[in-house]
Image 1 (tube, rainbow, N blue to C red):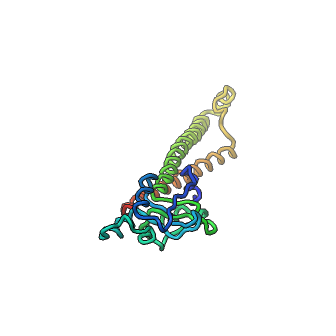
Image 2 (cartoon, one colour; image 1 turned 180 degrees about the horizontal axis):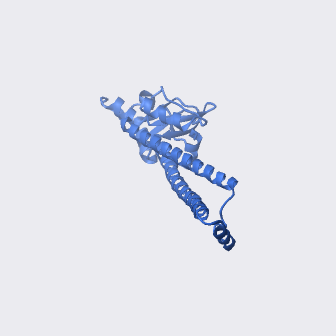
Image 3 (cartoon, one colour; image 1 turned 90 degrees about the vertical axis):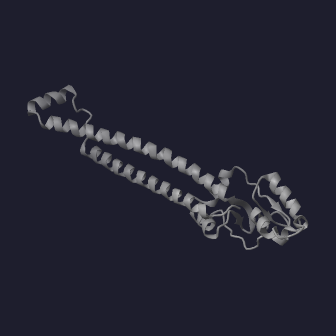
Length: 223
């Protein structure tokens, strides 16, 4: 999973920006209008000068007497954590938790191509988790079916092996145990069961990893 997958799942490639000479009042208006928690600070809408978030407003303006007329450049964050479209989703989550940030600009060849918020990341992973759960249920069902099929074949063999040869031959002629597989088919079934058990274990591991990530988010303060 890549950062580009998260951007694609958002359904929009819009990048919201604001100029550094805009006022804090204008910043507040844009944040409210777009219902977002942060904006990229840019002169041309492509290159990034910084990022400004609700956190910057709260932290840097609480002691200012007339904050609304201040410039965005006065409060924006310039030391910004970045990522690229080809970066892994796991790396993105690590940056968010390690640096305690909730918005990470995505830069491709020096151009802003998107912003991933912690909400975007959680939503994307929740969708993936739901897919994993559905796949897990499907694998469990398939596993039970194949185990049941193998057990049925083994039962037929046990019944036939416990009979007199002549009676067993009569039962075979009548169709009993006709669906029994050859040794190659048995081996394929055993291998399929082992594969399904491994895939189910991998599903459980991924689900546990996501649960741990969500728990880690408790330590990331609001934007």
